[in-house]
Structures are given as C-alpha cells and as structure tokens.
Image: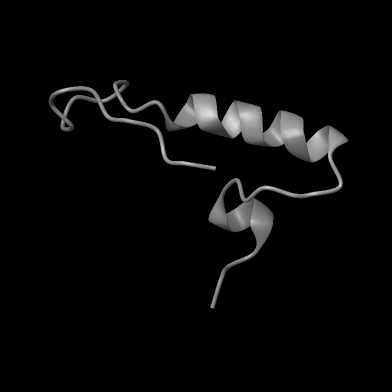
Length: 47
C-alpha cells in the first residue's frame, strides 16, 4: 500500500494520515489471505 500524504507542514502532529492507512491495512489483514504490512512490531522487523 502506498504511504499517505502529509499535509503542508510536517512538524505539526496530527496531520500525518498514517493512522488511516493503518486502519485500512488491519481491515485488509482481517479478511484477505494476502497480508499487508502495518507496523514494525506487528509485522515483524524486515531485514
């Protein structure tokens, strides 16, 4: 899945939309046989 866009100034918290991507990714993982990476901790660290 593509990374979400950041809104104008990246230093302000709450403007990153990665939480939306996470929510969708978890929904996909619940149903689909093809798994999507969510977070490093949940998915297992890539080498």
